[in-house]
Amino acid sequence: MTLTQVKAENKIFFEKGNKRFFNDVAYKLYKSGNGQYYFVQVSNGFHNDPKNQIIRVRPVDTETLKLGSSLDKEFKHLGDAKDYIKRLF
Image (cartoon, rainbow, N blue to C red):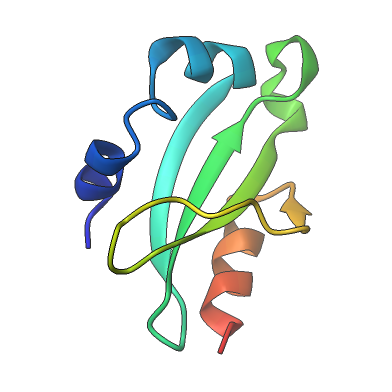
């Protein structure tokens, strides 16, 4: 599974208007310890301030490549989100 494939199956999520509304600056795709893929959305906080980034994690359905709901946990640093995903089993 690649980020390009996930984007192709979730076109509305990646439209420019949505990206602008949420102040998205990056997208990542990581695989957990149990083989589940997770989509990571990096957004600048209020007033488009990169010092207040919000990082959200969503599971990706392995069959349909559709994004699930955001996990209840948010992160301030990308490395923290990546470490969290690696530990999921």
